[in-house]
Amino acid sequence: MSKIQSIQTIRIADRPKLIWVEITTDEGIVGLGESFRNAESVEALIHEHVAPQILGKDSRNIEEISRLLMGYYLGFNSSGAEIRAASAVDIALWDIAGKRHGIPVYEAIGGKSRNEIRVYNTCAGYDFNSRGVNRRLVSGNEIPAGPSDDQIAFTKDAGALAESLLSEGYSAMKIWPFDIFAVTGGNTITLPELKQGLEPFRKIRQAVGDRIEVMCELHSLWSSYAAERICRALEDYNIFWVEDPINKMDNFKALADLRQRVRVPVCGSETLGGAASFQKMLSADATDIVMADLAWCGGLTEGRKIAYLAEIYSKPFAPHDCTGPVTLVAGLHLALHASTAIYQEVVRASLASWYPELVSGLPPIENGSIHAPEKPGLGISLHENVKRRKDAILRNSHL
Image 1 (cartoon, rainbow, N blue to C red):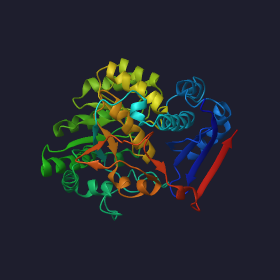
Image 2: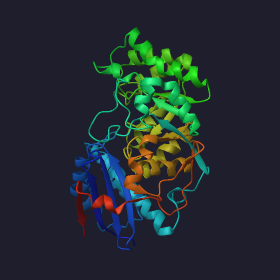
Image 3: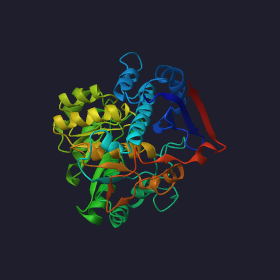
Image 4: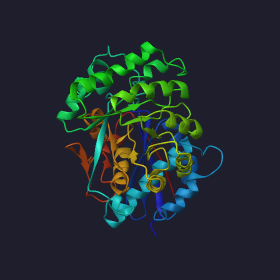
């Protein structure tokens, strides 16, 4: 038996939306998990709801613990705090499983389908939604915080940004120039707004032609009508996908209707939790590409099921990360395993700045791809000095 002895959560005031979970077994093995958004709520759920249920349980029984924590009652739909808490715990349990057997997580969940996976750069800034400030919206007049402040870059000169990414080996990028026009509700978008939002795509194609793939993120902000208008306008720019186009991504009928009316591929959705939601989306023929965030959907246990659904429905699979370093690496392990995986999302601004300040062992990006980690478990660990920071908030539950 590998009994769960303690659960520790770690938060820091500097990154208030992130929470890390460390689970320790009676063997002395420590597993690391993570989730994002409303970290205080996730912390409370872990210690008041999760810990009483799993302390003393055998950490090897990950599927059993996942079913216990995912639940099917009030609060357990989509990516609520309950599911985010379960996700962080599940990722930590898989980290333990890999470490116990001395193998990487991708091997623990069934082995590799590939030795490396291509990445695309989400063109966010250094503090994108991670310091309590909404940096999803920028005007382009802000002063860049550094050379990889890509969100400001795509509003100023998206063509130059594309050239910069290509010079570093990236072959795909994601931007969201329409978000700023959705602040009044996203029910419609005017022709001048549409023209302004298209400008970064025009500049990219003018600067680098078809040498880089471009994704358009719509952040679940738009009505079906406005989303259709945007998607039709993007058709001339050979977009790789339009992500989360409508403001109710669990309205699979509306999503399927939009997909049938436009010629750009639809990607969905980081906002969904649990394999059942993805099955409904796929059975409605509502998406072209399946995206899941492992820190929001139920962890690697549910993520693996979602990846299998993508395979069954012959859909490409692309794990999400614009949140934290553990989510990135967990997604990488699943992307290496999943047969239809095509991309792992990364944020070069985060990789160039605060991700390495928090964890050790981050795999490098070479020629636009991440290679398979070789260390046991996830292959990363939280720096010990994170817990000693003055702004650190630690909470423990134990037998």
